[in-house]
Length: 228
Image (cartoon, rainbow, N blue to C red; front, side):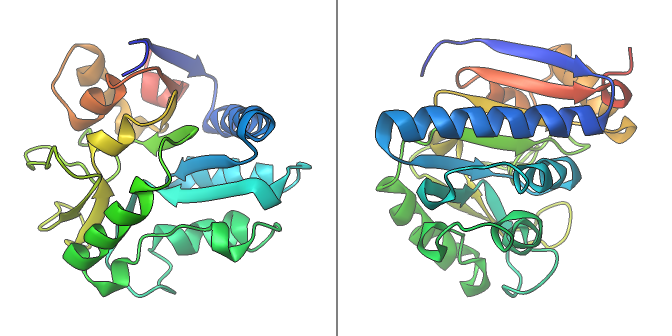
Protein backbone atom coordinates (compact mmCIF):
# COMPACT_ATOMS: atom_id res chain seq x y z
CA UNK A 1 0.00 0.00 0.00
CA UNK A 2 2.76 2.45 -0.79
CA UNK A 3 5.69 3.33 1.40
CA UNK A 4 4.78 3.08 5.06
CA UNK A 5 5.89 6.56 6.14
CA UNK A 6 4.03 8.67 8.70
CA UNK A 7 5.21 12.03 9.97
CA UNK A 8 3.84 14.29 12.70
CA UNK A 9 4.56 17.91 11.73
CA UNK A 10 3.96 20.69 14.23
CA UNK A 11 2.83 24.21 13.36
CA UNK A 12 2.40 27.23 15.59
CA UNK A 13 -1.34 27.68 14.95
CA UNK A 14 -4.41 26.30 13.23
CA UNK A 15 -4.06 29.12 10.72
CA UNK A 16 -0.58 27.90 9.82
CA UNK A 17 -1.94 24.36 9.38
CA UNK A 18 -4.63 25.68 7.04
CA UNK A 19 -2.07 27.65 5.04
CA UNK A 20 0.19 24.62 4.64
CA UNK A 21 -2.77 22.43 3.73
CA UNK A 22 -3.82 24.81 0.97
CA UNK A 23 -0.26 24.86 -0.34
CA UNK A 24 -0.08 21.07 -0.42
CA UNK A 25 -3.47 20.64 -2.10
CA UNK A 26 -2.45 23.14 -4.77
CA UNK A 27 0.89 21.40 -5.36
CA UNK A 28 -0.77 17.97 -5.57
CA UNK A 29 -3.32 19.34 -8.04
CA UNK A 30 -0.66 20.74 -10.32
CA UNK A 31 1.34 17.50 -10.26
CA UNK A 32 -1.71 15.37 -11.01
CA UNK A 33 -3.03 17.58 -13.81
CA UNK A 34 0.38 17.70 -15.46
CA UNK A 35 0.75 13.91 -15.21
CA UNK A 36 -2.80 12.68 -15.88
CA UNK A 37 -4.93 15.63 -16.92
CA UNK A 38 -7.08 15.72 -13.77
CA UNK A 39 -6.85 16.00 -9.99
CA UNK A 40 -8.91 13.67 -7.79
CA UNK A 41 -9.06 14.78 -4.17
CA UNK A 42 -11.04 13.49 -1.18
CA UNK A 43 -12.07 16.36 1.09
CA UNK A 44 -12.98 16.59 4.76
CA UNK A 45 -15.29 18.92 6.63
CA UNK A 46 -14.32 20.77 9.78
CA UNK A 47 -13.03 24.20 10.71
CA UNK A 48 -9.39 23.85 9.65
CA UNK A 49 -10.07 22.09 6.31
CA UNK A 50 -12.65 24.77 5.49
CA UNK A 51 -10.09 27.46 6.29
CA UNK A 52 -7.71 25.79 3.84
CA UNK A 53 -10.36 25.75 1.12
CA UNK A 54 -11.01 29.44 1.70
CA UNK A 55 -7.35 30.10 0.95
CA UNK A 56 -7.48 28.04 -2.25
CA UNK A 57 -10.22 30.29 -3.65
CA UNK A 58 -7.69 33.09 -4.08
CA UNK A 59 -5.16 30.98 -6.02
CA UNK A 60 -5.00 30.59 -9.84
CA UNK A 61 -5.89 26.90 -10.03
CA UNK A 62 -6.85 24.88 -13.10
CA UNK A 63 -10.31 24.33 -11.62
CA UNK A 64 -11.81 22.69 -14.70
CA UNK A 65 -9.70 19.61 -14.06
CA UNK A 66 -10.43 19.19 -10.36
CA UNK A 67 -12.62 16.26 -9.27
CA UNK A 68 -13.74 16.35 -5.63
CA UNK A 69 -14.97 13.57 -3.37
CA UNK A 70 -15.90 13.23 0.30
CA UNK A 71 -14.43 11.08 3.04
CA UNK A 72 -17.78 10.97 4.80
CA UNK A 73 -21.17 12.61 4.92
CA UNK A 74 -24.07 13.03 7.33
CA UNK A 75 -27.52 11.77 6.39
CA UNK A 76 -29.22 15.16 6.29
CA UNK A 77 -31.00 17.17 3.57
CA UNK A 78 -28.63 18.50 0.86
CA UNK A 79 -29.01 22.13 1.98
CA UNK A 80 -28.47 21.42 5.68
CA UNK A 81 -25.53 23.51 6.95
CA UNK A 82 -24.24 20.44 8.83
CA UNK A 83 -23.66 18.58 5.57
CA UNK A 84 -19.99 18.45 4.58
CA UNK A 85 -20.93 19.05 0.95
CA UNK A 86 -22.83 22.23 1.87
CA UNK A 87 -20.02 23.60 4.02
CA UNK A 88 -17.50 22.90 1.25
CA UNK A 89 -19.78 24.56 -1.29
CA UNK A 90 -19.86 27.75 0.76
CA UNK A 91 -16.10 27.73 1.37
CA UNK A 92 -14.93 26.64 -2.07
CA UNK A 93 -17.01 25.15 -4.84
CA UNK A 94 -19.58 27.94 -5.21
CA UNK A 95 -16.74 30.45 -5.42
CA UNK A 96 -14.58 28.88 -8.15
CA UNK A 97 -15.18 27.41 -11.61
CA UNK A 98 -15.20 23.69 -10.83
CA UNK A 99 -17.75 22.08 -13.19
CA UNK A 100 -20.75 20.69 -11.26
CA UNK A 101 -20.18 17.31 -12.93
CA UNK A 102 -16.79 17.16 -11.19
CA UNK A 103 -18.35 17.33 -7.70
CA UNK A 104 -18.81 13.74 -6.65
CA UNK A 105 -20.74 14.12 -3.42
CA UNK A 106 -22.25 11.35 -1.30
CA UNK A 107 -26.06 11.23 -1.84
CA UNK A 108 -26.61 10.82 1.91
CA UNK A 109 -30.12 12.28 1.78
CA UNK A 110 -31.23 8.93 0.30
CA UNK A 111 -30.35 7.08 3.51
CA UNK A 112 -27.11 5.55 4.73
CA UNK A 113 -27.43 2.11 3.13
CA UNK A 114 -28.56 3.32 -0.29
CA UNK A 115 -26.07 6.18 -0.38
CA UNK A 116 -23.15 3.94 0.60
CA UNK A 117 -24.00 1.44 -2.14
CA UNK A 118 -24.25 4.17 -4.76
CA UNK A 119 -21.05 5.88 -3.65
CA UNK A 120 -19.16 2.59 -3.59
CA UNK A 121 -20.04 2.07 -7.26
CA UNK A 122 -19.18 5.67 -8.17
CA UNK A 123 -15.72 5.80 -6.63
CA UNK A 124 -14.77 2.33 -7.89
CA UNK A 125 -14.47 3.92 -11.33
CA UNK A 126 -12.53 6.94 -10.06
CA UNK A 127 -9.78 5.45 -7.92
CA UNK A 128 -6.98 5.82 -7.18
CA UNK A 129 -7.25 9.28 -5.74
CA UNK A 130 -4.37 11.74 -5.87
CA UNK A 131 -4.76 13.11 -2.34
CA UNK A 132 -6.93 12.31 0.67
CA UNK A 133 -7.60 14.95 3.30
CA UNK A 134 -8.89 13.91 6.72
CA UNK A 135 -9.44 15.31 10.19
CA UNK A 136 -9.50 13.70 13.63
CA UNK A 137 -12.20 13.87 16.27
CA UNK A 138 -11.70 14.16 20.02
CA UNK A 139 -12.29 10.40 20.34
CA UNK A 140 -9.73 9.53 17.66
CA UNK A 141 -12.22 8.95 14.86
CA UNK A 142 -11.52 9.99 11.29
CA UNK A 143 -14.04 10.35 8.45
CA UNK A 144 -16.94 8.51 10.14
CA UNK A 145 -14.82 5.59 11.35
CA UNK A 146 -15.54 5.57 15.08
CA UNK A 147 -13.92 3.65 17.93
CA UNK A 148 -15.79 0.46 18.69
CA UNK A 149 -17.56 0.32 15.32
CA UNK A 150 -16.92 -2.56 12.95
CA UNK A 151 -16.03 -1.43 9.43
CA UNK A 152 -16.46 -3.74 6.41
CA UNK A 153 -13.21 -4.68 4.69
CA UNK A 154 -14.66 -5.59 1.29
CA UNK A 155 -16.39 -2.35 0.27
CA UNK A 156 -15.21 1.19 -0.48
CA UNK A 157 -18.07 3.05 1.20
CA UNK A 158 -20.08 1.91 4.20
CA UNK A 159 -23.23 3.02 6.02
CA UNK A 160 -22.79 4.10 9.62
CA UNK A 161 -25.57 3.79 12.17
CA UNK A 162 -25.66 4.86 15.81
CA UNK A 163 -22.70 7.22 15.46
CA UNK A 164 -21.66 8.54 18.89
CA UNK A 165 -22.16 12.12 17.70
CA UNK A 166 -25.16 13.44 15.78
CA UNK A 167 -26.52 12.69 13.34
CA UNK A 168 -26.46 8.94 14.04
CA UNK A 169 -26.72 7.90 10.36
CA UNK A 170 -23.78 8.63 8.08
CA UNK A 171 -21.79 7.29 5.14
CA UNK A 172 -18.03 6.86 5.28
CA UNK A 173 -15.21 5.74 3.06
CA UNK A 174 -13.61 2.60 4.42
CA UNK A 175 -9.89 1.89 4.85
CA UNK A 176 -10.01 0.06 1.51
CA UNK A 177 -10.80 3.38 -0.19
CA UNK A 178 -8.65 5.52 2.11
CA UNK A 179 -5.62 3.43 1.14
CA UNK A 180 -6.14 4.28 -2.53
CA UNK A 181 -3.93 7.38 -2.77
CA UNK A 182 -0.19 8.05 -2.74
CA UNK A 183 -0.58 10.41 0.21
CA UNK A 184 -2.93 11.41 3.00
CA UNK A 185 -3.03 14.59 5.07
CA UNK A 186 -4.59 14.40 8.53
CA UNK A 187 -5.28 17.75 10.19
CA UNK A 188 -5.34 17.89 13.98
CA UNK A 189 -5.93 21.28 15.59
CA UNK A 190 -7.21 22.59 18.91
CA UNK A 191 -6.67 21.69 22.55
CA UNK A 192 -9.72 19.41 22.46
CA UNK A 193 -7.76 16.96 20.29
CA UNK A 194 -4.72 16.88 22.58
CA UNK A 195 -5.65 13.78 24.58
CA UNK A 196 -6.52 11.66 21.55
CA UNK A 197 -3.42 12.82 19.68
CA UNK A 198 -1.21 11.93 22.65
CA UNK A 199 -2.85 8.49 22.89
CA UNK A 200 -2.31 7.94 19.17
CA UNK A 201 1.37 8.86 19.45
CA UNK A 202 1.73 6.43 22.37
CA UNK A 203 0.41 3.65 20.15
CA UNK A 204 -3.31 3.50 20.96
CA UNK A 205 -5.38 1.51 18.48
CA UNK A 206 -7.58 4.35 17.23
CA UNK A 207 -9.37 4.55 13.88
CA UNK A 208 -7.19 7.49 12.85
CA UNK A 209 -4.04 5.48 13.63
CA UNK A 210 -5.21 2.59 11.48
CA UNK A 211 -5.94 4.90 8.55
CA UNK A 212 -2.63 6.73 8.91
CA UNK A 213 -0.82 3.39 8.71
CA UNK A 214 -2.27 2.65 5.27
CA UNK A 215 0.57 4.43 3.47
CA UNK A 216 2.37 7.74 3.28
CA UNK A 217 0.63 10.11 5.70
CA UNK A 218 1.56 13.51 7.08
CA UNK A 219 -0.18 14.63 10.26
CA UNK A 220 -0.33 18.43 10.39
CA UNK A 221 -0.94 19.50 14.00
CA UNK A 222 -1.01 22.84 15.75
CA UNK A 223 0.62 23.72 19.05
CA UNK A 224 -2.65 23.44 20.96
CA UNK A 225 -3.18 19.85 19.82
CA UNK A 226 0.45 18.85 20.15
CA UNK A 227 0.58 20.17 23.70
CA UNK A 228 4.35 20.13 23.92
